[in-house]
Length: 139
Image 1 (cartoon, one colour):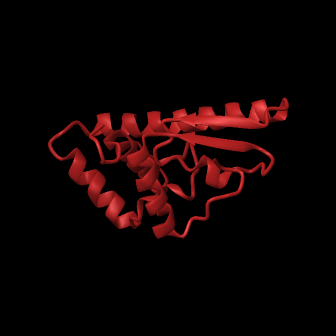
Image 2 (cartoon, helix red, strand yellow):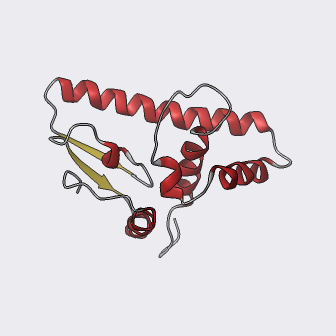
Image 3 (cartoon, one colour):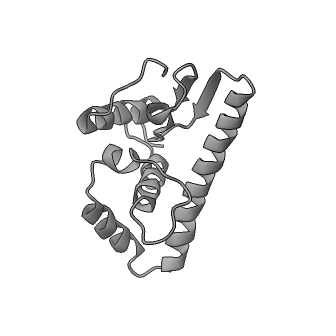
């Protein structure tokens, strides 16, 4: 983390989640906001993914992307189970560009996003640029 700059890890994770939405294989996680928050078209996402993998093992990039998508699915299924049992709050540590709070299917669930101030400011700007509304259930 560099002072005054958003997290590179948050960017890499968000890119993997966004590309997963258009990848040519079965989806393990669906997030319709993953692409819009990045501000990239499917063609731009594909071009960036190909460029990032140039000269490297493409299987590594695929496995990394599937890991990120699987991790997100697991976390959101765990939250859904907890909500069904009565949980009313969830905290996302290192929220980065995670979009759960903006897709939250339960308006009674309070979501707290915690991250580095520069990353949070960057996210707020990307949300505004994408026209993604910040829900009242988010802190």
